[in-house]
Length: 329
Image (cartoon, helix red, strand yellow):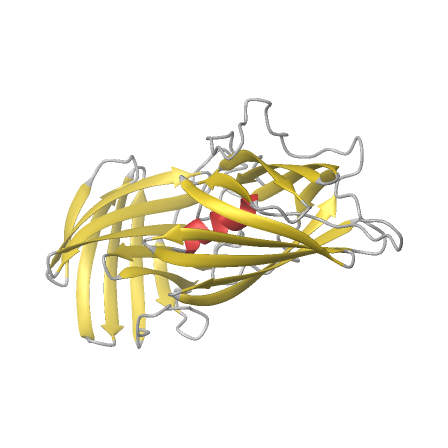
């Protein structure tokens, strides 16, 4: 569910500027500062740009986001600041929003329905005194629980280099595939090569977030990666007991079938930029369960972060597992 919520958050974003006598004008090109932002339980995107055209009470926000759990999105959405409810289609779902000024802050209240449950999002946008920094504080409430995010944007100066701007082909509420962001110098993607996850990885239980599931007591993954082949040997001391299993996978998108703890897992693995994405389906007590696992390797190659999103008839949940590379003695 949080994937959908974050995708909705990305499109309902706005900014405010400070003016004692008049409402702020939000127009400008805003670049997300991932280092200063707090994404809560969700992985950050590789990049995001909001281009806002504001002619009060009408606001047009063109969003280009790349990477992260929701993948690449590009869309244009229109709002009005006069308090009237507007409906936009985000990710195939209708989102109903009302906007109101609270002093120099713009408050966006949105509602959507997911799995017959109502989800509400409150966004408060504030502009710094020098009008160069935009902070979005969001609170999301659903039957699955509540969480917060804080996104910080820097205003792009005219003529400064930036990521590719959205094309004019973007339509209201649409989400289309976009080009991958330019890779960071020094990373495997910058050198034209996919990262290699080979090594012995020990789960850091204290830094990991297991969501609604009980945490593991301990876990070690031994990964062997060569070309498109990947072997993952797992030794896990879980809350419900110890287990060892091996996953034989390929990174070329072909389906691989493995057995783990008596469950048949059908997985496909692909690279999205420098991230590895594993999509797995299984049956548990005659119910279909799907898992999307995004692997991210730190620049120094010593930390592996795995952001998982699980869906089942019982609901959805997210996990964030942090592994530290074991240095050979």
